Image (cartoon, rainbow, N blue to C red; front, side, top):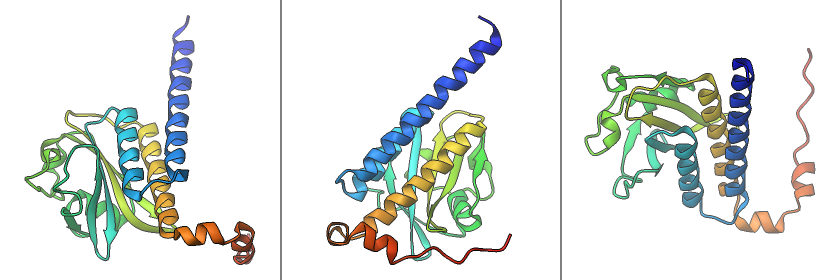
Length: 200
């Protein structure tokens, strides 16, 4: 078997893994789970797929980012770790609405914020994307490796898509159970006609 064939098969296998990840996340979103359970399930899936050491989800509360989910057991830190938008790499990602990838020594970046209570303070590689919901930044999802790691384009695209899926999960969570069960989906669609067509 030639090298091209091997490369093609490896890419196909990776694409199939990505599809399975997105499918699993979608299934979390449609099940009757609490938002906390959904977010915890997502970070665990991301860690398994990306073979990273940490995945953290921060959500925006007014003008602060609050740690709301982690694959590592930080029960005392969930809801307690808070960042202003002008603090840390995470704050920068939310403020700038941009992906950030650092392959090694992320703790040397002048934007980095030390917490002291998180093992992630000493991790080398850092990949972060904003969580987008209805066109607005509502949080940030971080992936970290304890050792240097060069992030691939597909890893960046994958985490960006996961960030979008988390945004969708947040929208679903805001819809009260009563509304979901007692409002006709047809009524919801017809009550929100498409915007005016734009000139091209």
